[in-house]
Length: 473
Image (tube, rainbow, N blue to C red; front, side, top):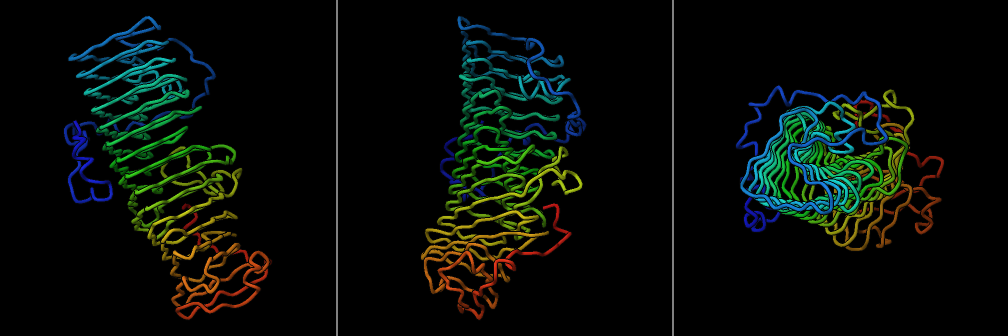
């Protein structure tokens, strides 16, 4: 099991210097290569209601059903069959239990929306407590699943390992809740996130834990509802730290996370553009690997992000992308206009406090990025169009600084220091929309470093540049 004391002694931002273990150190991924190569079938008809009862080898059903079990090994090998079902107001307490699940899911919708084939399924206003348990899953199955309003699952000091597709670690749907402390989580399969919600919403709270997701499209956190994480160390080898689909809320505090594909954060709407997505990153560090992988990516969504004492290391040099795009069902690239022409530009508002950030803001196809620096923040970078028209707003307070790395065109431009003395140009210029920034009086203002802030008319204020190679950001 994870040592909670170890995690608490080393804050997330210092964890790069110590060794963190996960379940793949015990069960080697190479032993399950064929299982992890399996793909899920998404080309199936949607189902509006649960088609049949959930099958399980151990069942506790009804409000009069209550059990405490310890020091046993339970298993299930049949398709679409759980090891444990706790349902309809039942209560279960389990400790020192090994749960072993194999057998395939025959329908992705029943697995996603009702937890068919999950190793552990807690549903319909039931409550479960797990302490010092191991859950090992093969062939593709959720590990611990919570379904339904008033369903709450508590998971402490637990080890979760999975191979096969769509094998999420903690998985909540139908407004279910899971609260996890001191977990070790590994998933090796396709689209198998460590902590995930699903429609119409799942509520995941996780603390003092370690997670590694190795498969394509597998994130640490998949937000559909609420993700609230504290002191989590994670690696998503072929996915982002966070996927968020629609108007969801994601809060990460004291986390250290690495992403290997798509972006550190990927916030999008899978259908029509939604408004209200919220991201809060506090005392948290992201590392993104790959020359095209940005820190934060937004597509077909209206969203806000608050970055407080946030650190970002990127190979790409790109802080934020806003795009007329979304994630494809393959979950390994972003949709071009040819993939889906019925999308909308992204509009994202980001507030940066007590952070030192390096990198660029890149917008595509009429998308908007509004960027505010406050409370002793610094930014080294600029804003530009990746493709088509792009719109940028920048605001600074008197305690913050901006160092330009290229010319930048802005719509709304605000600086508490009207002298602009907290902007260092390095010979680059700021072009601002004169009709939206009357406080500058249409003047050209000299910047330190040899550049200027210069007015342009509103008709010329749109950024129109095309870098075709970057369209799939």
